[in-house]
Image (tube, rainbow, N blue to C red):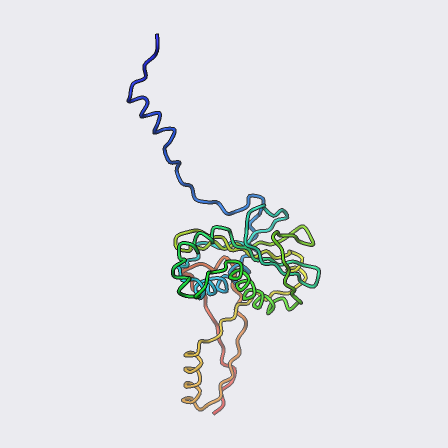
Length: 248
């Protein structure tokens, strides 16, 4: 005797087999990496360079979701757009962008064509971004940097520090990462201080203030040491300035 399956059972089975699986958020973090709080100030220090470049060069909505610093010795075999530099033939520095940036570019392709009058080249975009970052890194680590052609990440020594930035580009989460040989950071002297130069309007106001005062003021102040745990949105940091001398 043949067993007849009811239409309801077949429909339920069909829905179970062919139903769309639940979409899960991509976890960009390599499990072999360890979070290193002592390098968080580096991630904070360079985040505005990346964000500023993206805002200036991509006609899409850019939002920084998170940034972290890791230490590791094994590079995950992810597919990246890679831009690398050799430093003094002793160290390596890389900037990588996850492959899904191509999807973001394709979605905004019409705007990009109008902006650049030519097809947008992702690799050239990454190269220009890395040049912008390296010019800033040279201020902290004034070594000799040589561009290298590389499709993978290879370091002279095993350990490296990864500064990871997760950006939302038109609601697509894209990973931008800076990879620095750990020995480069140990042998170099990166200043923990972050200087924010005044804007052009700020300079005009300072000049106007000097013209009005007609006195010479000598101000003595100490560098402001900011703990990485205080670098949170909404935190207030006190700045102490002492007037050393006033001369009419």
